Amino acid sequence: MLNLMRIGLTAAVGIAVSSAPVAGAGECAAKPALTTYFSPKNLPEKGTRCTWSHGECIKIELRGYLYKPKGTGSHPILIYNHGSEEDPGDKCTIGTYFSNLGYFVFVPHRRGHGKSTGAYLDTYTQDFCTKKNDAGFCKMEYLHKQVDDVEVAIAFMKKQPQAADQKIALMGHSFGGITSVFANMKDLGQRAVVNASGGSQSWKDNDDARKEMDDAVRAAVAPVFFIEPLNDRSIDPTLELAHAAGEACRQFQSAIFAAIDVTGEGKVDAADYATDTLRDKAHGQFSAQVSVWGPSAHEFMTRNLAQTAKFDKHCRGTSHATN
Image (tube, rainbow, N blue to C red; front, side, top):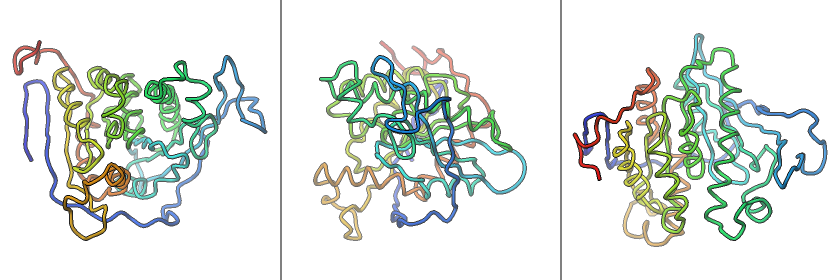
């Protein structure tokens, strides 16, 4: 592990040396509870199940999967934000892994996804985005709106018996990673954020994604752990966002994990990097490889959940050069 240490912040950029197969699909043995975490009054029973006002769906039923840890006493809260899948499912591998470690894990389906109602990305872009001809902008606007869903999910989890409402972590993959970073601009009680591959598929072609994620990490409320595999679509978000966090005197950590064998040849070689399609496959498989990155994420969250981070600006011009 290559360590980059600066006064006033902690950074770790590294390359892991192992990988693991993706868990097979099937019924979740943990049997999480499908739960409604936001249900507005007078919700229409048919149609879009929304009340439309000025082109915006303002009444959306939100549902998600709740994993309860075993044991007595209080348990830290982990909100896991899914990617752009139209049907994210229960994220059993992740929910089971972290609930077995003692977390109250909640997988909220944000508006327009899975068990929740509302407009999915394509519909939002075509009908409701304020700049309909700018797909990159629309994606980010859509995710910023979903920060409200994350906030509601946190409020819901704080009411759960045995939930430690002072120990809250956010975690997300892909669009869920971006949403987690955006949510971390607001003090929602979170003490740690894990961003898995957030921005990787947007980094090359979406100027709005690069700028807004950069702005978000510089305004971070809680420390962020940036992670992704070496053959993701782009590893620049992990490298560049970590740098931006350091420049803003934020505490952070980052790690590049081993490339994933997406060709199924039993080894990692140039073929696993050959096309964007294969890199996108690595991008998608990474989140389920929780046995690889989970221990690092658990250590990061445990350390930061113990106390609220205190950021300062004293590192500017002292431990590193700034313009």
